[in-house]
Length: 95
Image 1: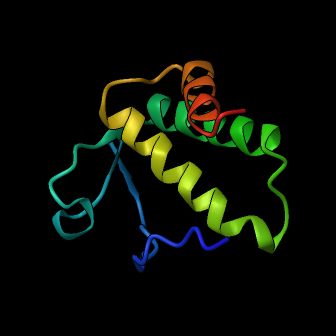
Image 2: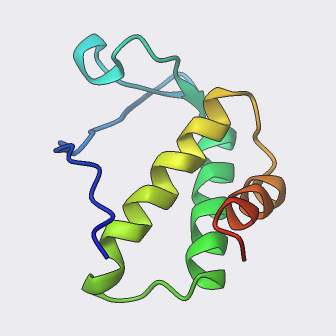
């Protein structure tokens, strides 16, 4: 099964400044910055989702990338509860 989105992603390098993680304008693409607490919630949701989906090893990277993208989308929509993000994502994966 090919889950590739056909996109090529470049690594993002965040630079902490005054309690937020900011990206340059090119990296952000107009997106807002997240606070360190919000980033911590995104990381927690990602770890929880990967554990529940049993994503380990190199073969899991394409799916883990989709998980990360969806978590960022949920955050951009204003959701920062890690447990809710995890449950929403798992429901979307029908698990």
